[in-house]
Image 1: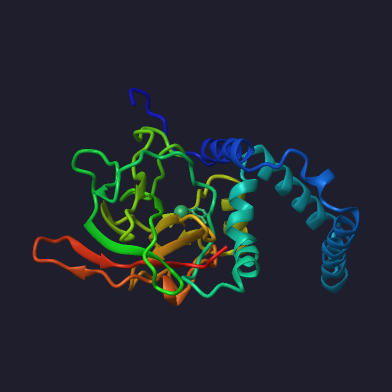
Image 2: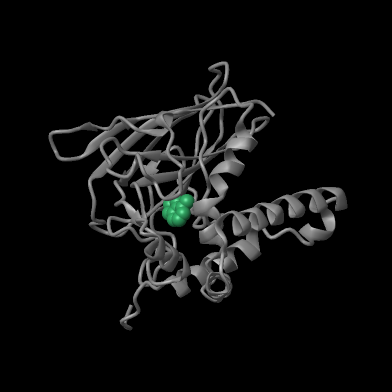
Length: 282
Ligand code: MBD
Ligand code: FE
């Protein structure tokens, strides 16, 4: 980039909000949700807020601080970030509780559909000399009973500075985003680099909450995947690296022991990963 643009909360928030409107915002979700359901859920959430106010004797100053902060979340476009960091993990647990196959995790705000198709054995799109430990990842897609499946692994992750293409400036559009299609043997082999731990933006409303509460803003380094095959339920997951200090205190609560990789270091400084996916039938 010829400008000295820097990654700001408001810019990545605006991009994530735009992405959500484009890909996921139901046409009229409120109208389409049954009245009884809206009534029940809205009353329970409001009641939990009322109880908190009474239990902790919340003051007008605190009420106005909350109001100002909520307004800022919207102004910074950080509703996708806020919800995916602090709420989505419970929705994911509930949605996947009955699965027999591989564990999933949250999608987060930075997925982009229609990434470049690379076949079953290829590099993830990346810059020449992309920084970070090279990874060679081999695995396969199977059904829960072990039958190999022709399917797709979509992979996206941050770079070695912790930035995602399309949500931070100065990175090629599809950098570290790709789609890998397996043959009937279900096998894939992907070359990429190990991402850095990710710090959610500290200069926006979410960062303000974190600072005000004395929390930290870190997620452990992670690879995001969406895995699909005909007749099977889509699996959304994240994979983590052993020894990351934030595997135990992820701000987004999205780590599960089954999702921690076991990379094997090679003499040339790269690492090999063996990790596959078992999908539940539809
Ligand atoms: C991320 O990269 C992410 O994966 C989630 C869940 C939230 C914020 C940033
Ligand atoms: Fe992420």
